[in-house]
Length: 319
Image (tube, rainbow, N blue to C red; front, side, top):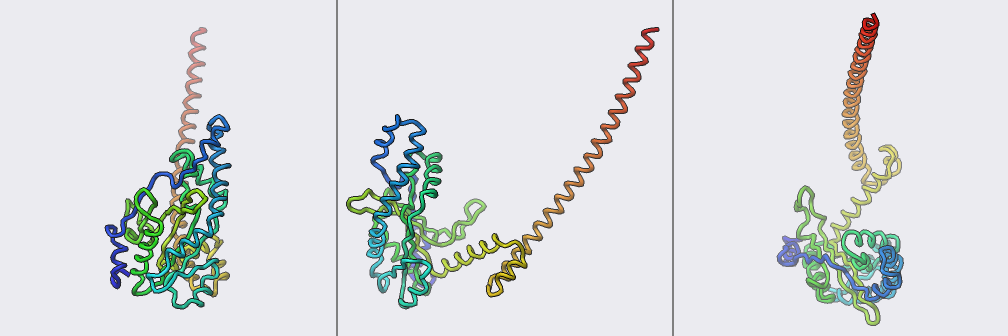
């Protein structure tokens, strides 16, 4: 990607497309204080307002502007990359839609609104780690994914996508967030590698008559996304498998079976080594127990001798 297009070179250059950090709230809910004042502003009331009042409110507004988000995203991605981006309403039918649009350069899809349980969990976490209300830190109330076609010009496509989204949603420091993982993928940070190459941005969706709503947009390279999703599926198969034979039986038609078998065999070897270490530790503990038992016998014998001496002393004292 970087070697064949100018856009690709810019995408992987952190100076050209630098990440934009934002640790503050992703939205402002103007009515939060009014709700809080209804319950004496106690800590219990804060928690209740945050999780049971503001989260449903956010879900309601997000549902109200979901189609507006899809429309604005489609307009933002129109032109500049050969044609308009293809909208995929149901991700499960993406292959069918792309067959009908064989000259596609980008496709995008907007996800369903997260359920209340997941939002409440994140809200509680943010309230504890950051500040009240935690619900104002939710940055993915609306979610979308843009996939750029692979090929020699894919770098240009990704770069143009970034420029279009940046312009359409005014992404800049203090108004949005960008994690450019194309520029940092594979780089060690501490003892861990950075995330796989993609772009993750948070924008603010403005719709007349509604409060501003934060949204998350992911930008992917087609081939990298396929590799990532196939890896995730492979790990899921491994997680669910009870044994190598069960994987072989269930996956004769799968190209991943040999890989799964190898991984499980390696896991089995690691477990075997751990078992040996545990056996050695058990033997050491047994030896220690024996020593303790022998010491206890010695002490018991000494106690008997001491008791005998006491008895003799008492006998002498009476004489």
